[in-house]
Length: 127
Image 1 (cartoon, rainbow, N blue to C red):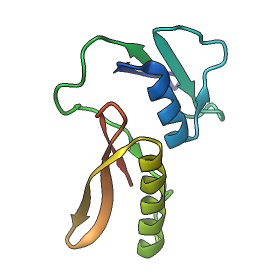
Image 2: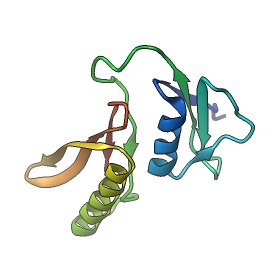
Image 3: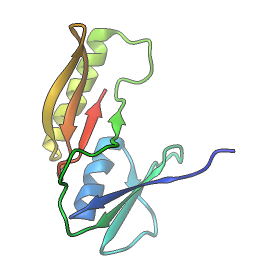
Image 4: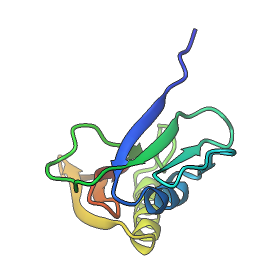
């Protein structure tokens, strides 16, 4: 039996973070969830976990130890050129939504993924 779970995240501005991750993941605001100090988003197909954002007073102070990898290229096997194109396109759209590119990661000279920061400085990857 699968256990349903929610990824809980601290945020200075929960609504802004929820809006960013709605754009990044294709999620939707959780119906019926209304809290001025929080926000929650869900997978509209009900497959992925919910993600909740709770207002906290302190800012991100160190590298987060857990992060989201957005697998925009789908499942293997991949055409390497098409996979890289899809990743770069998603990264560009997330920059427009408020993210920052940190670096591109290569493995043995081959493109791997893009490391990014969300609007509040939390690291995530587009792969």
